Amino acid sequence: MPAMDPRVARTRASLRHALLELARERPLDEVTVSDITVRAGVNRSSFYQHYADKETLLADALEDALHDVSTQLPEVSVAAGTPRMPVELLTYLEHIASHAALYRRVLGDHGSTLVTARLRNRIELIVIDAVGTARPAALVDLPVDVFASGIAGSALGVITAWVARDPLPSPVVAADWLWKVLLGIGAWREPEDVG
Image (cartoon, rainbow, N blue to C red; front, side, top):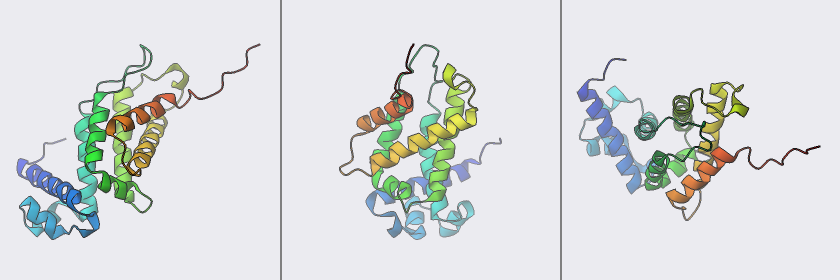
């Protein structure tokens, strides 16, 4: 894949940063394209050269934050037993906490299907990259895309339930919840009868 022109990359990064800043200051519905372009220091036509609308910019901004964290994730090894929670998971949840109102809106009942779908897809790709073929023996016959989709759905479910809480529990608490759900999906089952 060819590298993006540095000017294009800078403009897009400025627009994403501006939108996240503004969304921290006031509800997203009150943020206009003009507000974003003024904050980013670009003109309105530059906005539309890169994004069709505010929702597409938002999807890029939130997906970009997840991408930044995911590039630092180590490969998950299950060979040595229960994998340890990657510190990058906490870093990502700290990002979400700093933009909690925005995530609450986009992941909520009347949120953005575009943003949710893009985040889910990005999580699926992260799982595929991080886990690859190193799945627990009990899941080895499960197609990797099905496994990744299940993890992505669970992760977004936990994140959505977390950001809906008021007051918002800390990212450390949310990371613990998320890691327990991801690791413990089968742990609650009753042991099979022996004999």
